[in-house]
Image 1 (cartoon, protein in one colour):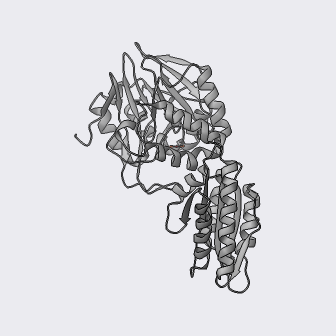
Image 2 (cartoon, protein in one colour; image 1 turned 45 degrees about the vertical axis):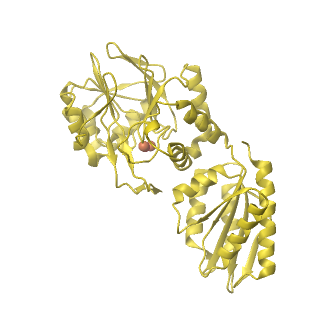
Image 3 (cartoon, protein in one colour; image 1 turned 45 degrees about the horizontal axis):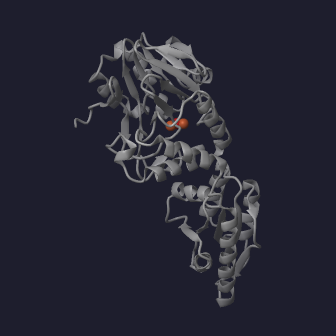
Length: 404
Ligand code: FEO
């Protein structure tokens, strides 16, 4: 396939997005598999472009569009979301398609006005839409659905009624770079969708539940195709990702314990290993994540899915280790609900790691389920026995707390 070849996803409907193979950091979210920015072109009596791509990829998107149609013939540019990974190429497109109507939510119009003051946005012909509004393209109809906080206040989605395709923008996305375009063509897509939810949408879970209710009221269900703005298109079995969103938004977990830690000279690591052994011996699944050796985005997915979390840190300069403080701040911002936790760590003289973690955890509103454990210099057998016992206790709590 020509690199600039668009991909036909249905009659008259084309993917004209870009794959960002080298993306490894999406505004602080680690993306070891890369990413993509999906834009879609619909050819009918009227021509519509749904979303654009990051500004650095404008020319690549434009080349794909030109393989199908002269961009000056585009009638509608739908901007589902202001964030720059989707709106970044609007200035280029609106210059190429000066007669196009730019369709956005009310907050979308306001946000685009703030972002593109120096790009001639005062000359853009805006049409503001709200949930249920429709635009006819001829044989096809676009309907708009406001999707507040999925993932910004301005976010909306576009539903192509006759083809039953939901252009869901950020919702139902995955950060992966692949030459494949459909969910049934790639492996691990549910895991990638879970990582994406945990790192992007988790804090907005109450809004996700409201949005799911709205989809039901609009009669949109599992018989549609979902074409997100990141990753692959859900054509085979959209029910699985819709049902997973409901579970993640409700905070449902499976019976497992997550042990997160860092270590300087191995003392905290020995404690972590014994906690793992305690959980394992009680017959419960356990995951161990060293924060300097694992992606935080994957670790965040484990946080989302685990009812019980043990966190260990060595003391460095009277404080918790920097990866632990950074990660706890990251977790607190993503606001997972209903987690139980236990803290452990080591120190040489002054201490401070466990105290610092306790303070940080207050803001995360997790529930402490076992008194913190700390050792001086190195753990001996009696300390390690305590760690194993704690692991067994955490395993029992995980069994009680898990919701599926
Ligand atoms: Fe993919 Fe909220 O931007």
